[in-house]
Image 1 (cartoon, rainbow over the protein chains, first blue to last red):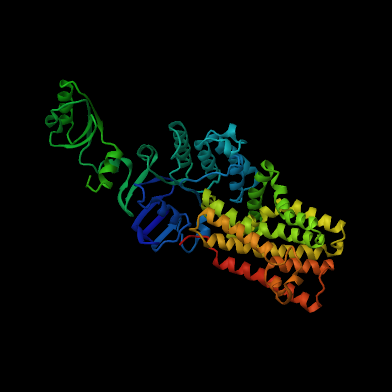
Image 2: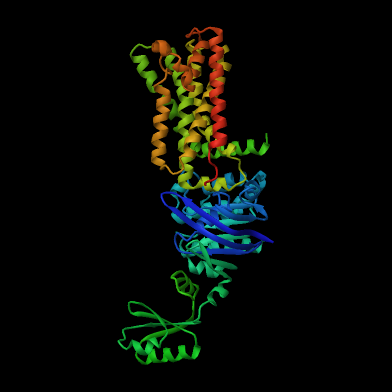
Length: 303
Length: 246
C-alpha cells in the first residue's frame, strides 16, 4: 500500500514572476519505508512536502496520503501525518516537555498516553534531563531536538521532516537517525528532505533526487549509486606536476592539491594507486559515493 | 459542535497562555497597566472617573482582541509553529478561538480589578454585570476576528509590519472613537460611536451604568449593531481567512 503517492504533480507560484516549482512529479512512497527527497536549494523538495502535508494547494495533478486526496480530503490526511518544517524555531518560554505535551494533546490522545509518549520521545532524543528547561536556555541543536521529539510523540503514521537534522552536531544527528530507523522498524513511514548525503545514504530505504522541480533519479541508495558509469574513485593527494599519467583519460575533479579520479575498472584503479605511490603521492581507492552521483546528476551531466 | 474542536481550542489557549503565565507573571499586569494610563490623566486633570473606568475595561478587552490575534498569528508563522498546526487534525476555528482566548485569560485579573473598582465606586451597579460581560465578549469576538483576518490575509507581510499594524489598529480603535471620553462630545457625529465595536460596547455599558441616557429603541439598535458587526466579522473570517496557502 502506498503511504504517499503523487501523480503528475505540478506547482506553479504566481508571484512577481511565475515559477514552476514542481513539474509532473510522480512518486510513490510505500508504507513503512523511510523515503528521502534529495536536492539542491530551490529544487522543490519543500514545496512537495508542503503539498503532501496539506499546507499548500497544488496547481495540477493529484496527491494522496493513504488514498486520501490531499486537496479534497485534507482533514483525513491530517489524522495520519505530522510535520517538522524547515528552519522551525521554538518559543523561548516553552520547555521541551511542554512542546511534547501540548502538541500530543492536539492529536486527541488521552492524558496518560500523552505523558507516556512525551517521556519516551524526550528520552529517545536525549532531552529528558533538560525537559523542564525553557527553550531560550537551550542550544540550537537541543531546540531542534525538542521540536523533533514533539513530532515523534504524536504517534502519527507518517512523519514528514524537512531537513530535520540541519544544524545538529554529528552525535545529535546520529541519535535522531537511530530514532527514525526505530520508528520505521515499528511500521511508521517517514518522508524526509535533506542536503546531507551521508544522511540520505545511511538511513534511507529509498530516495529520489529532485532538481529544478523534476525527479531525476529514484531508487535505493545502491541503485542510485549504480547510475554512475564509474564504480570507483581514487583520491590522490600531493603536489605532482605529472598529472597526465594520473588522469588516464578518466573524469577528474581537482580541489587544490587533491584529485578525485573516477574509474570503471578495479585493475585500472589499482594500477593508478601504484603509480601515484611510486611518485611519492598519497592515494586511496573507494567506491563512488552518493554525493559523487548527486553532484554529477544535478550538475547537468548524465551519470 | 464537535467536542474535539472545543478541547483543541482549550489546549491552544492553554499552550498560548500557561507557559507565559508561569514564566512571565508580570504579563498579568501589563494589559491593565496600559489601559490605566488614560485613567491616570483623567484623574489628574479632573475628568470623570466613571468614563475612565469603563474605557479601561473596554480597552483591556479591545486591545488584546485585535492586537493579540495579529501578533500571535504572525509570531506562530515566524517560528513555523503554524505550519505544524495546519498539518494537524486541528480545526482553524480551534486555532483562531484558542489564540484569541489566551490573552483574554491573561487579561482577566486586570478586567476583574477594573470591574471591582467600578462597583466599589458605584460607577457600575452590580445588577449590570451581565450586560457588561455580554457587551465585552461581543467586542472581543469582533476585534479578534478582524485581527485574525488581517494576519492570515497578509501572509507575505513581515512580522514587523503586522506588529506595527496591530498596534496602530489597537490604539486607533481604543483612543479615536469615544471609549475613554463621552460620545456626546461628538455632537451630531455621535452616531460614529455605534460603528466601532469598542465605542459601541463602551456606550452600552454607560447606558447600564446610568451615565448615558438613550431611548429604549436606540439601546436595542446599538445591541443589534454590536451583534451584527460581531457575527459579520466571524462569518468573514470563517470564509476568507486562509488556512492553507495557495
